[in-house]
Length: 314
Image (cartoon, rainbow, N blue to C red):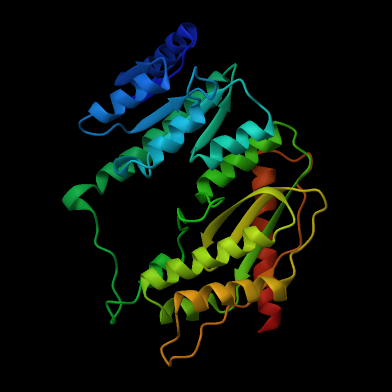
């Protein structure tokens, strides 16, 4: 696994080198600034696999470097871990909004860091097993224009939606907020009624566009500050947000906003009728003092709550 670490502190660069070497990871390149890192990335053949980036770099900050990396074709799904002394929510928000996969604070908890790196390596090894010609082909239905049902169960990346992040990153974001003792945050989930039926009537591209429209409408109608949202699979979304006054968005207004977006996209059902989206919304959950697995349990329980509401409407 080819790693690039970017930090202007020589002592911390040495620490990273020592820690990574101790677990057998010696394919490490070091940079002191975003400019130096950018040149290394451009020259890397084959592409790098993983990044550790300080948020508070000189001149060009780490979150700007992360955002630039995410726009490069070879680095859409690479791991980018921000490592910083900054613990304010606004800095955490900036990191994940820029596309960070994870966020650790200085001084490093050595055990936590090495465990995270080993998880990254395991993920990279699994990805390598299916790279190139060995990558399995997508499962196809009888109609090749329709997406396979297997994809319906999987989280989806919605890059076109500002505020939408990967589910794994949302988990890390929520855990980091809980560590930072951010009390004023809440979690809420949304479930599309009869989402499986919708999935089977759309092409893969249409389903992705519909999910992007739903996520956009949710973010615009949440009464929250700087919300993030992830598509979790099975037609469900979960959002984490800071609140002034938490509360469920107006369902009718939300569904109307989605309908207007879909009309503009001219997406229709097989019989030519407009697609209508009905949403079930969970009650807000406020994690409060919970942390670690408990705060993630609270997040996933909101999805269960939204699904239960859909079930009661059937």
